[in-house]
Image (cartoon, rainbow, N blue to C red):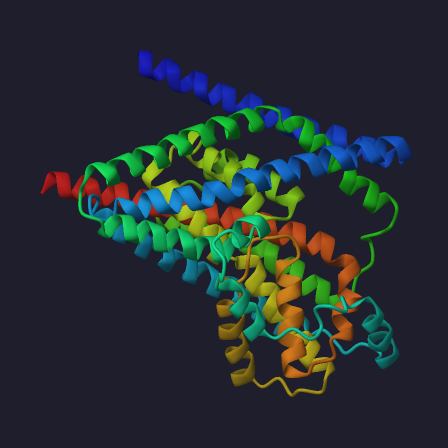
Length: 420
């Protein structure tokens, strides 16, 4: 009876928190519509503070979570299984996102833009990025300085370092020195999660600021333009993946998608406004453990990895945008060519960093590498704010689904092993 009462209290607290977050969202939207300059500057400042704080916590969260989990590789034989399940679900959901985008592109069939429109778009292409190649992007992931990735917040480089350190600790023979290092890392992790919980407690103020910021932009007409059919393909693909494909994955593993989304809603909302999977990671991990009931050994290993490699929205954006740009450049899009770009989009998305506009910059470098009319990327740029928000929310929702499915699989395997 006591456990049932505690569970009911926990559920009620979660509902109150969600209502508070939604209330903050509505209040922020209303404040942004007022178009008061001083208020707008204040909201921009608060939003920037929260973004900086979450980015501050995200870097050590990723590193410590991966190191401590991999360090226990020799002690917990299920770590390898967790990794395999997470990667399998990541690849399945990412390929599905790309195929949904491909199907919509074929059905909706966006037309070509006027040549003078593409030429004007060249003026808006970031000049320092138009010449980059995908080779440069991959090379930038390999760190040449152990401090530099931490200073730059390079998620992929940090993940490589964390993997190296975690595996090295796992290979170390048991000793007093190893035990001391592990206790220190786990202590730092506990401190970090206390800080995260404190920041989440104050987050309604941040949501008000984020919502006001977006509402002011929309009211001012900054993000209201569109490219018609192209935008319809990108947004419809994200919506179908979010509300149809990912829930079907959850149902197939015996999970309730509505309940799972409700429990992960704080992370999804945070992703919507920050436009960064990495910055949202502290909220995603906290929501998974404290609201969705995912075990720590799964969430603290799967989510940091998914934040880096599980990019459903990015895969769809890279594919659809690449096809659209190449089509405008005179490339004949045969079905084999489209299938090849599905593979390229998935591989590129897996290698993308979970930072704002990461997909845009990556697609720009890909198109520059194949000689496409990158002026189209300049035309897309003004509306990318909305696309980036929706993509990031979808990415974090997909991370949450992969984590929940992996956790369910691990619990079933443990139950089967206990019976046998």
